[in-house]
Image 1 (cartoon, one colour):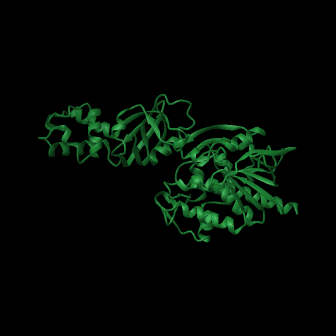
Image 2 (image 1 turned 45 degrees about the horizontal axis):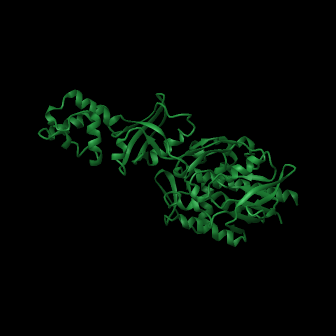
Image 3 (image 1 turned 90 degrees about the vertical axis):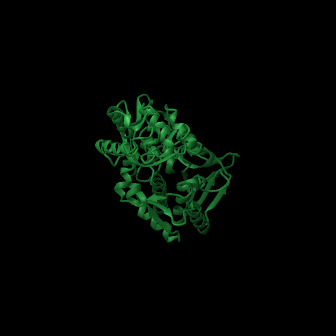
Length: 416
């Protein structure tokens, strides 16, 4: 019987272990933490957005880096295949807005439990608190792994599924990068992605905790549009976050600097500038005897009113019927073009995923085997592939893990 050591007990590692063991490979799954799936547990705010119920072509459209590399992985194992697997194991799923797929229970622990049950049923040797230190490579072939205690263990195949650098507390500390680099692999510089942004404007702090729904944002670098979308965002003590902003960060992860990077919020995207002006006219008419500061309650969230008034430059104590046409026009423009200057992005500890990783030109896209070290495979976030939010990054993990395991099984069959 052929043996495989899988390093990393996250989504890719567990799924590869299940697939390889299902085909008759003896699998040893090494996880340096005290339990499996620590990052999977917090995915989707603990609900686990495990894939996106979309066509394969849509998967590609949501991959930000090296989408062509995933051609074989996605076409051989797509989101429908993944959903069918979990449902066949008794996990009930549901599809929500944006085709995001969650367990019906809204508990990520149920996803992990399914995988753990399958690992036990297949007699996978799960070795918790075991940290891989280095690969055993002889004549360009990976022969096994040495752990942090110096113990050597040989294997016919080794899979690196150690993740990237995001959420280091879950074990993603770049171990796989280091082990692969020693034997000739190179890295596309890892950077945080799907991460909140920091702004120059300090008024964001005043709005901390305020969530805006149904707004449109546009992100420009040196006046060139790099991102535009509609949805939900959140103000924080350092700047901005929420789904819209996290997705926008994926378009910023490879910027060399953030000079002249401006994000504009359209607070009223369903209305034209003319319609906004008519709305203001009506509001002003209804509140003509009030002070300006007391007139915007039906237009904006209460927490936002003092900030917008200050940015508008209109005297908050001015009576509404004394607000000039020019002042009203300026307020209307502000509602459609609320600008903030991006200072940078938050770090890996707040990043959902890592952009960058082992360069894909060094990995066979049809097998996930290293082109540099035979019998060494790579899957998941360790690779230089990343996608937008919505379950797409987890689908990358499932698909690349499946393809790696499939190739191991084919090699085993061919060698018998």
